[in-house]
Length: 374
Image (tube, rainbow, N blue to C red; front, side, top):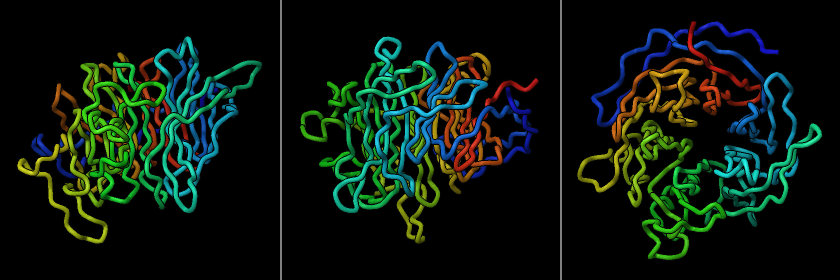
């Protein structure tokens, strides 16, 4: 049974500037959706809907994977790997193999302990079995790891996404160590492009260098927490900047996005970072924010329930406590709307019915369903 719908909250004006689109969007006056609370989770991080069932898998950062069925309590899925929980680390993203209906393969990302006080993100896969009211992952095997493992508990990124090319894209944060984002001997601060078994995909731009570089699709990233393909096949991401400078980027193979050499933000201690400029040789963001909104997630909406959003980006904001709409037209993007949700938003997902689902952040976080305002 669904809980009562939430009252509509006041709208938060957009703040900051965006690169290449003439500044900030106008303030939104009304939220064009109603909000229904469906369930609660403990520190959820990501979700994915299972085809043909209405059910969804939801990750919780402490290392639990939940199978949620509408109108019923979520159940634990057994067979999940041990995770390194703390800071930003824990169980992360969840994705389905393109042939999930046939092979039932589920992909999970997580923070993994190393030898000594080091850790790194990893991605593995296993077969989902649901029977007799229980669920489990069988044969879970790690297929990719961040290299090298380093100290600290931040900037794992570890978003995972299958593209229209049926290849696996993984965002790999620079782990708050700055320089690895420009170092091709490791895969920190990169987006990697892999076959479904974790091996480097053919045609990657740095394949001739061999080694880890053969995985790399793009470099110069800080902390990518959203990856999504648009209907035209273009890949978009959002990533957290330092103090200011949160970004939405159009991802193009072989490009260098500049971190930590350029940013539209500054260091937390106040030291300046050179802004993106046409002559710096780095790929500039299509949209950016200052002050920060802390983007947590990204989808490109493809449903019919909200036709005005079709082909546009929807972004969850943590410090911004908002759902953000960025209009996309081909290779261009501009800010459109920012709606105050009153809580940190960890995840945005599109449901099979075209509704938009949000996961709040933190303990006792709600799963919300957004439908058009009546």
